[in-house]
Length: 206
Ligand code: PRP
Image (cartoon, rainbow, N blue to C red; front, top):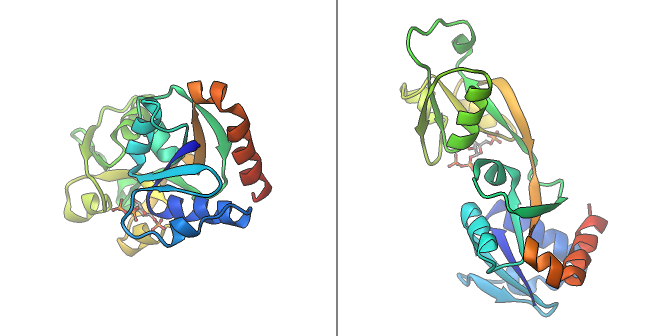
């Protein structure tokens, strides 16, 4: 059995559709209710978890393969895995965003930056040698400038419609994001064939 952890939600849907297109029997997944672990006829044992937990399961050798967004990989301190495949789905980017006046306004204090991705935000502003205060928000990060908690945000932009709807705009793009297939280093030694079969299957449908 190849053990796989998939990020719940959008990534789960897209990856399972990709596998189904390539002949994997994904019906048990498509018809699941609240089950969190499902074994398919094709020898896949799949669990569905929050993005950061996908990394935790992979780090501890509970799963061989993880499907997770590059955003989660960049924001994590865990890097001991192989990033084997860019699935070219779930494409979006990290950006600094704010109200238009942010670019020209002079701040006489440290700027406040809200983000769910505090490591990304910290690394970005450090690279610019800007000393800012990072404020962690768990979601709807756009609220930061809207309610006056922060001057700007570091967040994911996909279509840009959330920014637009709240009068915000991209100040600077940080980097591109897409869904990745990552592999536990020990698993690649012992389950090489199964892992490459899965990669080939996913590549064909790219
Ligand atoms: C993400 C992100 C933005 C939005 C961007 O949030 O944090 O808020 O999507 O997408 P758009 O550019 O297409 O508008 P998500 O919907 O995952 O929820 P969250 O804000 O609660 O994290």
